[in-house]
Length: 435
Image (tube, rainbow, N blue to C red; front, side):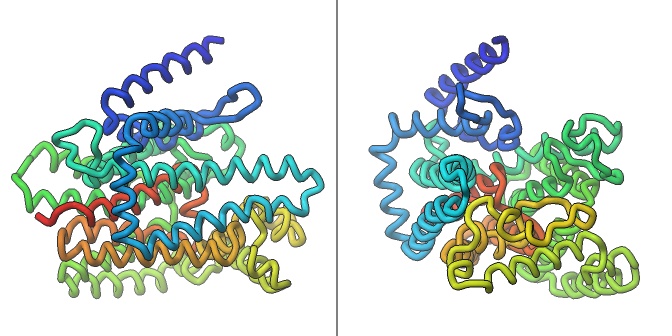
C-alpha cells in the first residue's frame, strides 16, 4: 500500500509538471531513461516507471497539442519522404514479427502477449515519442511547451551523469550492484543501474559524441567558464564509467569515432597517428590481440552465435524473409545448439544486422539500415549548416553502428528511446532556420 500511494503521488506531480511545462517534462523523461528498471503491476498488467512517464506525456500531448502539432509532423514528413518511407516499413515489419514469432508456440495467446509487450516497449513507445518530439519542434525560448534539438541533446548528455556516477561509486566501494548480479563473476567490472557491464557502454558511448560537440560548440558562442567546466566534468565521469565497465565494443566504437572526428575537423595527422597506435597495440598486447581476432571467450561465443544465426536464416525461405520473430532467438536459433557448460542462454545474437533480421525479418533489417543511412546523410548535410551539431549526430550514429557489430545497441527500453530521440533531433535541426 505505501508503494502505491508513493506511485500515485509521483504520478500526480508528473502530470502537473507535464501540463505546466511540457518541455521540462520531456527533459525529465530523458533523464529517467534507466527508470525502466523500476517495475510494478497495475492489476494484472506489468509496467515500469519509464512507461508511466511516457504515458503521461503522450496523453497530455494528445489532449493539448496534437491538433497543432499534426501540421508540423506533416511538414516534416513531406520534407523527408525517404526516411519516413523506411520508418513506415520498419513499423510494419515489427507488427508482423509479433505474430510470426508466436505462430508455432503451443500457447499462442501467452506468446502474443509477451511479444506485444516487447513491441510496445522497443518500437511503439519510442516511435510515438519520436512523433511527439518532431511535432513539438520550435523555439523553446519563447514557449515552455515547445522543444528544439539543442534541448534534447543537453537532456541526453545530462542523463549520463547518474549512470556514470553510480558506476564510479561501485568501482570505489564495491557496493550498490544490481541484486541479480551478486552471484555473477564480474572481475571488477561495474554495471551501474543495469544487469550487464556492457549496458554502460551501450548507453553512454553515443552521448560522448554529443557531449564532445557541445564542448567544441562553446568556441562559437560567448565564453562561459561554468558551462565548459561542467561539460568537461561530465565528459570525464562518462569516460571513466565506460573504462570501468571494460566494454571493449564501446572502446572500439569511440576510437573509430575519434578518428572520424579528427578527419572531419581537418586533423588528418592525428587520425593517422591514432590508427597506427591502435594497430600496434592490437598486435603487441596479447589481451587486445585476442579480442580483435575473436580468440577470447567473448569473441568465440559471438562467432558461434553468428554461425547459428546464419544457419537458421538460410535453412528455408520463410526463415530468410521473416526471421524468428520477437524474442524467439533462444527458442528458434540457440536452443538446438545450447550447452550450458559452453555458453549462457541468450536472447540476441549480438550483432545489429542479425538482431533486426531475426527479430523483425528481412524487411525490418533493411528498413533500419535505411533509417541509419538517411539519418547519416542528413547529418552530413547538417555539417554545412552547423558543423558541430551535424558532426555530433553523425558520430553518435557511427558509434551505435560500430558497437552494434558486436553487441545489442537497440533492443532495450532506454537504448531504443535514445536512438529515436537522436533521429528526431536530426530532423528537428534540419527544419530549423539556418543561422
